[in-house]
Image 1 (cartoon, rainbow, N blue to C red):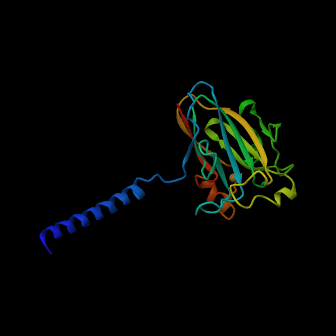
Image 2 (cartoon, protein in one colour):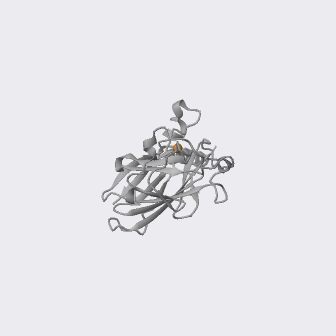
Image 3 (cartoon, protein in one colour):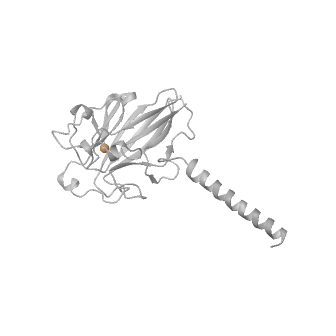
Length: 233
Ligand SMILES: [Cu+2]
């Protein structure tokens, strides 16, 4: 092999190794792990009390991507208006969050009736299909699917489910669910703190079917029944 050919071969081999190394670093070491953060902060000035609409849904299963097929939440992307399989979202500080949650999952009686009490929302109420509600008694009527709770902000919202046997027997079977599936529409508002921070939120119904006490699987996995709300100042 001539000297130029040997040099060329060496350079090509070097570039191949360098490219492979770069690929590994970018795709495996620097890649952010976990579900994406849906950003609701665009075009909103923090600390002005401006309103921001956040839309989520609860679904009886996941059936998207290769993620485990557990009961889950989705968030409607404010940019694409598509449902995204995540529970992480960012909102501006000092703003009024108008939350809409579509309750497509069936009912489970709350392990602790206290979790049926609405706290931390504007007026300490939620609106279930337009009806003002301050407590959902899931033992008097099976009426709660999951909860949306931000413990450090004192927010506890029992998310209403369809109550009839017929609806609970014909729940959405492919997620994300669509309006022709049985569901409730739960609306409430709350005001975000005036300073930045990351707030953990979770469902408090042990809905991890098949796991010890129902607290494994989706209950402890970001993107399903727990997530973070980033407050951005
Ligand atoms: Cu749950």
